[in-house]
Amino acid sequence: MPPTIFDRSPVEQPSEQSTDDTRTDRTETTTCPECDGHVVVRGDQTHCEDCGLVVDEDRIDRGPEWRAFDAAERDEKSRVGSPTTTMMHDRGLSTTIDWRDKDGYGGTLSNRKRRQFQRLRTWDERFRTRDSSDRNLKHALGELERMGAALDVPDSAEETASVIYRRALEDGLLPGRSIEGMATAALHAAIRQAGVPRSLEELATVSRIDYLEAARSYRYLVRELELPMAPPDPLEYVPRYASTLGLSNETERRAHELLKSGMEAGLHSGKHPVGLAAAALYAASRLTEETLTQDAVSEAADVSNVTIRNRYQELLEHEITTSEPSAAD
Image (cartoon, rainbow, N blue to C red):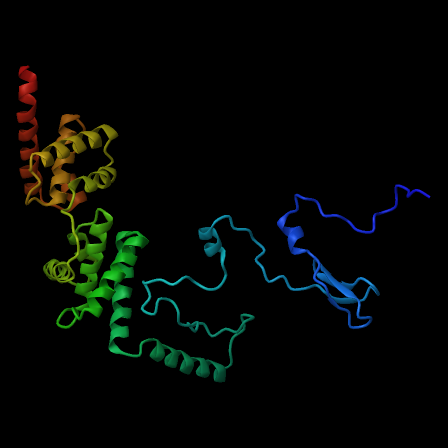
């Protein structure tokens, strides 16, 4: 008798274009504990093909419930703790006992438990900073994070500053120098390498040391570690101060042209980059007939009016000199 349309073939052939899920559901043959028959595993259930005994069900899926399309996304979604970072003295590998005296359900701990956890916090802090180097590094990294947050420094620059400070600590450059001074110097070196428009004067305002000590520490750090430092670029400060002063795009573009032309002529040699950027913005505002006073530029850039006037005259004289031949032609 020919089979009807309701009959199924005894063996189902898998399709050629099977997905990853069907590959993972391939049968795994073991022995049934009741009849010694074949045991198959399909999905989250394990049963015997001969007697139908369910050996195991609701198996734990130890894989993630999310999908990742590249290595960076997979690492970002991984729930195995915080990633290691150089901004912590132990690189984030140690444990931390929370300061709140709460249990897992949010309830308040008893007096005996509170005293116990206070002792645990004390010993945990002692184990995390076992010697003077760890205490030094912990204090310095805290200063780096505080100054970086005050100046809105990118996280990448803070990480670079922590690496520079670790190098100075390993090379024995810290004895005889203050922690705050070397931390400020490391942050300034990282800012210079990253091209972030922050001057040493701005760092000194948020640091716990004055400008002279910060400058001495920076020169000492760069010399001893032989850090590759390019000369400061005044062009990096133009967009920042133009945005602070609310200038138009035309004025910013004109200031960029003035400053670039002056730098090609060597006017920036031995000059402060912030003063040159401020003078270029003031000169550009005069050329574009935009209302801008020297006092406003001085307050925004934190430079004196005398500096702005001197650099402003140099830039305009160079502009007039370079434009005269073309006018004569």
